[in-house]
Image (cartoon, rainbow, N blue to C red):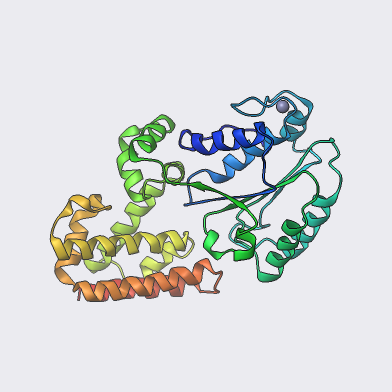
Length: 329
Ligand SMILES: [Zn+2]
């Protein structure tokens, strides 16, 4: 845990927490909720450091005291960050049970204990009930920071035990300004933000992981299908080991835009204007009703992936690309 800075669009939430700390009015559990890519986990880490620090400033933890040094070294005995063992999988009930013991020990440094859980919706009912028990009988001076982009999926009884801190997507100008400072090529900023619904961290991930190029390759592959240069089976081979959730999301985005374009013919509010030619072709060759049905089908496949369903990647992508071909028959 090295970086304890917050993002510029989180100042209001930060001031609120500083005020609670200074007026000795902290709740024992907070739910940090809001859309993905708004930096909630980083905020939670900065807040944990601030709450544990012996010499906290309004801008954050001092970074030098014993508590800060322990935290930086990853050996602070009164801090826990609980995440799933594998990304995209649930937090295990054993981990929550251990957490319960941790929450009830006396703080070894004589101050608070801080526990971060992220993502807090990633647990089954048994684990969630075990967590609820922790929240109902908190140890003295224990503060829980639950982080969730899908707080609607959490047990309502857990939600209601937490004070809520909501994180909205920053305003476009704020997101542009921040992202431009992070990228070597700031000319990509508008396109990246269009593609990620103005989520600056998601946009940065797109840039860092070369996802714009991957998306372009996917569009080229689908155009190749339309022109008969490739078969669905051949194209699926290139995509079976990709991030399928994201790949399918891109195709869903293109369908959305093709439907819009077919209905009003106006390209100015499309999110995928760089693919205008393909979108126009789709809008011309296909019926909006068919495209909307296809969108539903793709969304159900994506949901199965998100729920950890056991889909065969090659078969899934062959199915997707076969259907793409049918749109333009
Ligand atoms: Zn400190």
